[in-house]
Length: 32
Image 1 (cartoon, one colour):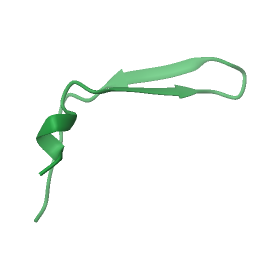
Image 2 (cartoon, rainbow, N blue to C red; image 1 turned 90 degrees about the horizontal axis):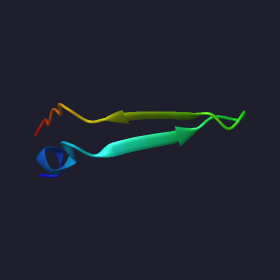
Image 3 (tube, rainbow, N blue to C red; image 1 turned 120 degrees about the horizontal axis):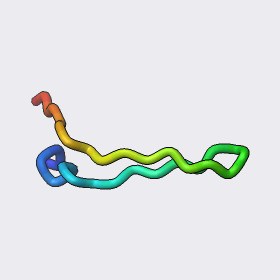
């Protein structure tokens, strides 16, 4: 299962104007 290993991962997206949006994964859900 991958979901638990995503906790604490940093996601970053660069906007067209060059600004950065970022966030940290603090919760995941997994369905089986």
